[in-house]
Image 1 (cartoon, rainbow, N blue to C red):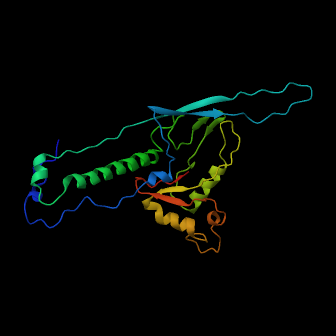
Image 2 (image 1 turned 180 degrees about the vertical axis):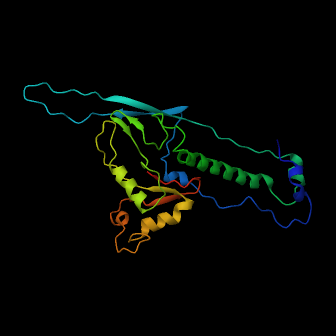
Image 3 (image 1 turned 180 degrees about the horizontal axis):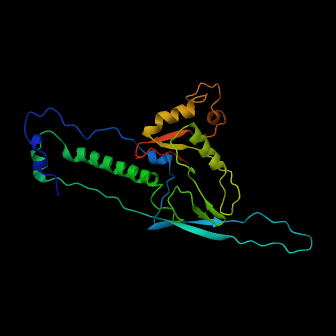
Length: 247
């Protein structure tokens, strides 16, 4: 359906002082704080999780060496989507408009719509992180029972908690305790905290204060003094809940 004179009545009459409502500043490219971008010319891309080996057992003198098997565990498939939106304007609406260059104005609005859609789609990965089974292992992105060869593993707090000093420190402790598919320790570290705008002041106090926040104790802020989160935090205005994420 084309934009016609019926949607632009005031622009067909003299006496109009201003047009507004399409020119706003945008939160641009916030997805880049979360995701790496790659190019593809295929319908989908796949990534395969590999499992290594378990801890080596003791071999008694004169006995045979033990053998272990490596394997593929799960495959994550990324299916590409096409996003498209367009507009049409009737010839009469263009000819009779007294004030506006319609095509250029609405082309900018269309670009803003497409850019916003990109950010919403990217943020939805985290917005659905605790509910939708969108991982290659059949689990939600954040779960306490991700299946691995050695059993299960979790990448969320064992008890849900708001972002505060205790939950922040416990998250970093849990990350440092992560293992691979066979239960071997990995040198994992939280590099960046991704938060919604509702938590930006909480994060600023937790991440920038040299002392502990909200206490009368003369203790240091251990997270800050140890440089535990080297890339600090990033605010994503498209997150719809008050959850915080480490990458």
